[in-house]
Length: 88
Image (cartoon, rainbow, N blue to C red; front, side, top):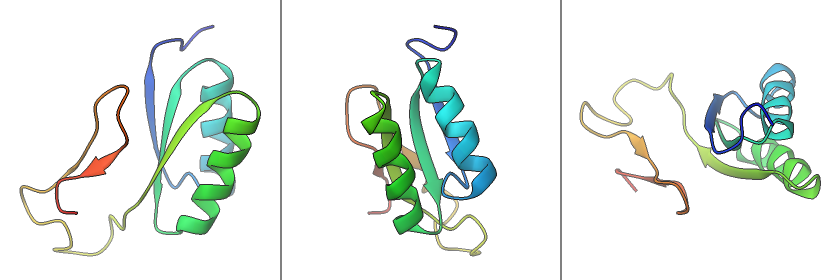
C-alpha cells in the first residue's frame, strides 16, 4: 500500500471532500486523524473507515475561533496512542 505506516491529518474530515480524502488515505494504509468542528460527522466518517478495516481517530477542533488554543497549545499525538490535546 502506498501510505502504509504513514499518518494523515485531515481537517474538515466530516465534510464531503475531507471525508473522501480521509477514506482514500485509509484505503492506502494511512492512519487517519480526522479533525473539524462537527464531532458527529467526524465520528461517522471514522466509523466507516474502521468498518472497512482502516485506522481513524477523531478530534473536534475549531481552527477558525481566535484564541481558542492560544499561542502554545496545539493538538498532539504519538503513534499507537489516542489523539490528545495539550489544552484538554
